[in-house]
Amino acid sequence: MCAVHPSTRKSRPTVARASTRPTSRDVAQAAGVSQAAVSLVLGDKWRGRVSETTAERVRQAARDLGYRPNLAARNLRLGHTRTILLVVPELTTEFFAGVYTGAARLAAAHGFGVVLYPSPEGIGPAPDPFASAPAALDGVLASSMAADALTATETALDTPDSPPPTAIVCDDDKLAAGVYKALRRRGLRVPDDVSVTGVDDIALAAALDPELTTVRLDAELFGERGMHALLAVLEGRTPEEGQIPVELVVRGSTAPPRA
Image (cartoon, rainbow, N blue to C red):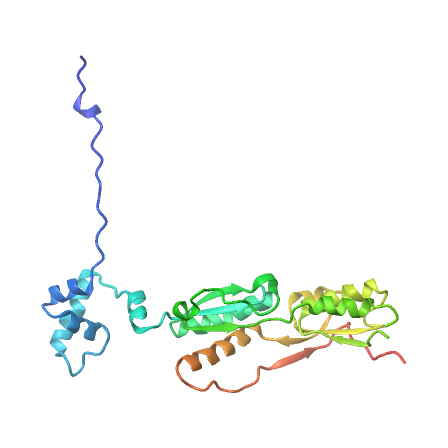
C-alpha cells in the first residue's frame, strides 16, 4: 500500500454558482420601499408621487446592486418590441446595404432595433417571414422589385420579326447589366442601336462597357426617409411628404437614336 503525499492529491473541483441578476424586488428591499415606488422612480414617473429623498434612495440602491431593468419584459408588458423588420429584395448589392445603413442608424437613434430580411430569390414581395409578425414586430419597412422583369425583356428582344426599341429605361443598374447581355445576344450594340439607362449608380454602373448612364440615388437617405415615415406612423403622426434628391449621371450607354 503506498501513501499519497498531500501535495500530489487532486483537489476537489470548486463549483461557483452564477450570481443571480438583481430584481426590482431586491432594489425595493434595499431602499425600504415598495416595488411600485421602484417602478415609478426608475421609470422617471415619481414626481408628485414619492419624495426626492425616497427617489434618490431608490436610485442609489439600484446603483449599489447593479440593477438593470429588463427591457424585454417591459416592452412585452407595454405591447411593444422596439423592433422593425426591413425587407429588401437581396443582400448582394451595395444599394440595399446603404438602405439598411441609413434605416438602422435612424432607428437606433430612436431606440429601435432593425432585423434585416431578404425576400426569397430577390424578386417579388416577400411573404410574411414570421407566423405572428404583429407579436414579434412593431413595424415593417419593405422594398420589393417586379418579378421576371429581365426575362420579359429578353423575350421581347428575342421574338422573331420584332422592331427593337431605340432605348430601354431600367429601374435598377443590375437589371440594366442584364439588358446589355440580352442586346448583345441579339447582335445589337449599346448605344449605337439601343440606349440603356439604370437607377442607383452602384459601382457596377461604371464597370460596364460602355459605362452606364444612370440616376444617382442616395441609398442611405432612402433608408432614412423610409424609417422616418414608419416611425411617424408608429407614433400616430402623418409622415412628412418630400422628395429624395436624385442626379442624372450621363455616361456612354446613351446616344441620340439613329435616323
